Image 1: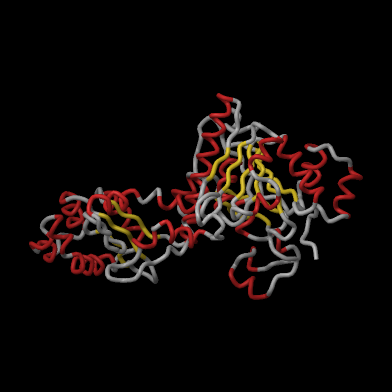
Image 2: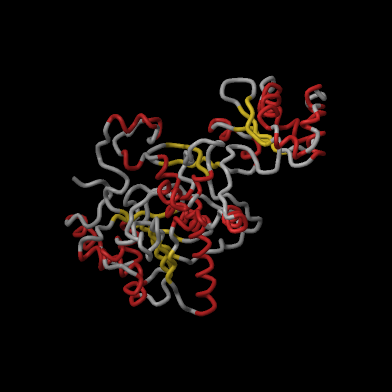
Length: 417
């Protein structure tokens, strides 16, 4: 078996929520050693309010005795990483962090722009310690510009990037996505930038600074909207689940409670195939639906008719029937259906991993299969589980020195009062 592409690369991660953790999770999946430097309260307090467990944030909805190690979100995005708890506000903590930078390849954070400079860890400082270091920063609005000091998560940056303006139904108000999709976009973009910087360093020997603002991760994927505005000087309308030229193009109700199927028809040939699957109902011969422009103009009636037909069918069975007739269709799966989907199972999208606090659970691995470099998936570390490895093996501290750090509360393996 070949080595993974990033074997031998060490990444220091200062991150929270989704954008940063996804970036470094992908780097870990490619073989990098990712060390997350955590605050002792980064995963939450020692005692959790009863209301917090209602949201299924914890395994089985139970915070347990170590809630900081039972978060499904944390354990998913900490796969393959190491954890060291280090108080970066303490001079000794800062000193140890810079020693770690000296023997690492990448430092990444997705805090607000002011955090790393406030710690004293801006790029010129890190570069002086290690000229080959690559630093990637992912604040909501980047590190330069009039909004650089604004704090934001995926939803505010997504709004500012323009995406939600186009989301929603015709003649209705803008809608934001239920999930903060900006975070994974930003994580993927940052990961690509790190890979490019590593390749450049391999050729030149020089590190560099990467400013990867999350807001731009939205603005740069709206190319069709930008081009449309440049050409027409007008804003395209919100169209819900519909398409600017495909028709029918929507989510349609199916048999059962809250079951749906998405259908997209791009040509008259595909429309004829859909009509055949529907047993050529008389209404489909209406001249209003005879060609693509006509179907586009009459989508309200078209959607009503198709919805009446799909309502008689199981969403997954209908997907297979339509696909077998060359029609783009996808069953809208809920999470239980995603976890049991035979296609995703065969592709090993989810792997079962044993964790000391949550037991055996399925986790999503990195979304690729490599023929020569199979991807091992390691469980998420407990909070501070790798303190001794990082401080002792990597930085050369003695057991007594590590014990002194714990006594001074510079390191820990649990939230401190």
